[in-house]
Image (tube, rainbow, N blue to C red; front, side, top):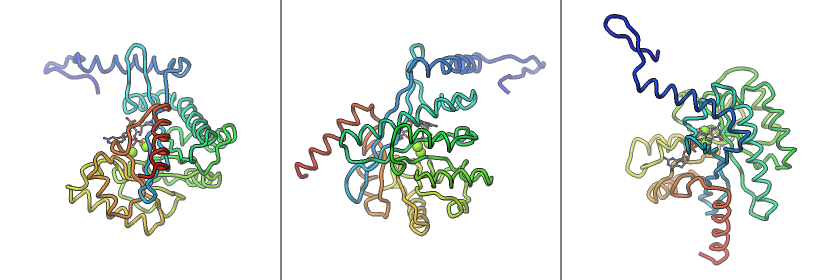
Length: 285
Ligand code: C2E
Ligand code: MG
Ligand code: MG
Ligand code: MG
């Protein structure tokens, strides 16, 4: 409850709670108009293929800039969008925009990248989620093999026949499924072999500082071994330093994402990064 009780039973709102509540209510109102007002954009964070030393993928991350509130992080507004169901149109917009942009890069002659899109629980549970992904793929003409859907363990462990059907339908479409923030959720591994999952993204809390944290190193080695046996690709998230990256180079992990590889960037900045890499590689580093 947001209310606090005094000794004699009176209830009152503390100024802080009141302020938080007010911000939430106003943000929710702003959120409803934000899509029409074009206040959202996507940022793109590179994923590095460690074996071939090239960018092989990119994660799309939504950004919201509001006139009144300025930048609001997704950790704050995604839960609000879920509460209000606004995540449904917003999620579709993100998916379409990510596929459209990825197709555009391919048409511009960049080496093909896989684009990873975060899917929220409510979005996944919408009855026509698979159809809407399929529709967006044909609309944007993106080859499904270049789309990856990031779901959370919460979705994966839902033991509903509908969930399993949806995951198989997505697999049949040709898109890939990854488990985001792996290691922070549930300890059940059963779903990993039961469901058609392609990728584990190890949560950043295990990766940042891994070179000097023996416990995290042990957990990561364990996940890598599990993934190898189940034939799953692994992406390490939260690679923040050279030491983090060097540690991973000594493991079986083949993909890295994080500030050290590249921050989430605007389209223009990301394109410049791709171009500069192309040049430095053809220049022979
Ligand atoms: P996530 O899917 O795990 O995304 C990775 C988050 O970690 C991003 O935060 C990214 O900016 C941040 N990050 C990347 N590299 C590093 C690093 O080296 N160190 C640290 N400390 N952080 C790093 P962001 O963009 O603030 O997003 C937070 C979360 O919000 C995401 O976590 C995701 O769950 C959600 N989110 C973001 N964009 C979307 C979206 O388009 N749709 C949905 N449904 N959720 C989204
Ligand atoms: Mg993600
Ligand atoms: Mg996520
Ligand atoms: Mg994550």
